[in-house]
Image (cartoon, rainbow, N blue to C red; front, top):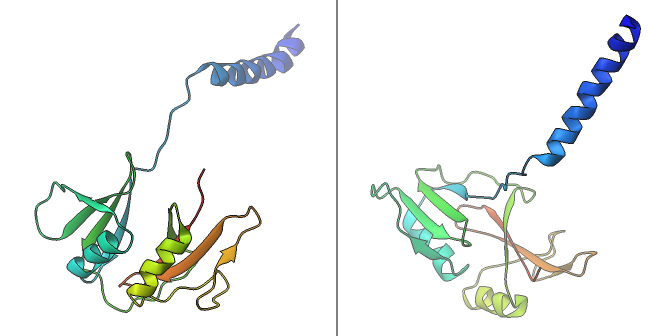
Length: 153
């Protein structure tokens, strides 16, 4: 009997643990914000407002060192001044925005003389992913990589 309890009890605890986990409500995790450390707050703010077309939202610090921009109903982009200029950035680390029309967005970049490329680095080219989503990459004033795609999900 002791042997059965010693073997069976751990299994019963494990099974109950898995069962309880499925009964508990799942927490909804969502992205609250992304923060970018920028060298020129005014230049970066204008870039994200005019090129990416994000609206600014009130920021609580009122210290002239932050800009908060609305990305969605639950997410913001925070720009924080004070970064060193010229820090190299890797394309694998990027922020992505989806737009209704990639061709209209590319026209905006062309009008502002902002170069863009595909994932492999071919200038003035668009990548079509295996799922059919079209995407481009370019850099903001601090060299952060930005992907813009036409994902409509």
